[in-house]
Image (cartoon, rainbow, N blue to C red; front, top):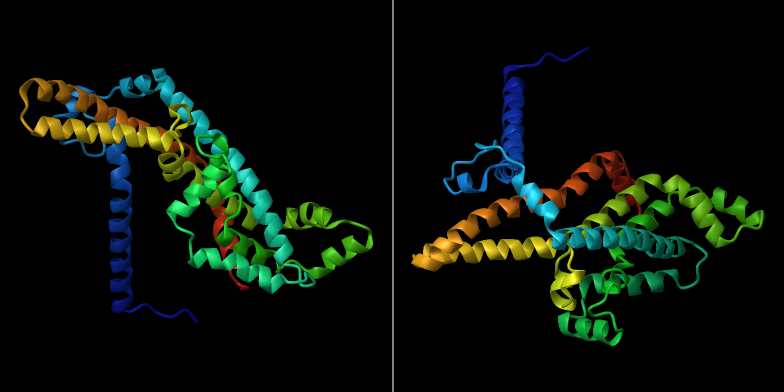
Length: 299
């Protein structure tokens, strides 16, 4: 028998709806505001008052981005790093997770403990920098890939998921003469789509959003990804605003025009930089919750 709702139930539903609407608006507004500024004429943006729609629509800001070879080069570096870093991270981290999920693996608990220690006790910035420099990775593209091949948290999730796969699948494959590589890539990999999609998203977002690695280890401007180019534009905009607020006549007037263009270009660059992740995420979302829940059942 269906329970009849009382007044308190309706009040609770209304409160939940109000809270969800507030959270939705608070989350969506900054993005819509940035999109509106990026689609608004640069000179009109200085007047303020832009909310969620452009007052004077234009695509000039995006045309300026497309004409900038630096941004195209940064986009290429970001895409190359994300694709290679995600594929390499899945391969190495997944192989480690598979090995540590084997019950007959000698020293499995010891190696797991060795992997867990860096999660809580880092070596520090200076030792890490000297290690990267000694390996010859500074100022090279490989510094974006090699240090990120193993992620312990992702390994734990994948290991826990692999432990939920029935042992009979591996045993039957081993009886037929399959190697561990065959078991991993021909049996475990195809049945682990949810966790692989989840970990792929983790690796991709990590590589796409990372700016710190470039800030510390890269001096070659041709190796800068989109995040660092966007950071340079934002810093330039802040400097322009500071100069204009100081009331310096000649420099202030020059910077006011630059500030306008830089702010519009900043928003347009930001929209372009986050667009691929926004497009990809809905296709992986259906695997996301399932992969995390199953991957976290076992420790």
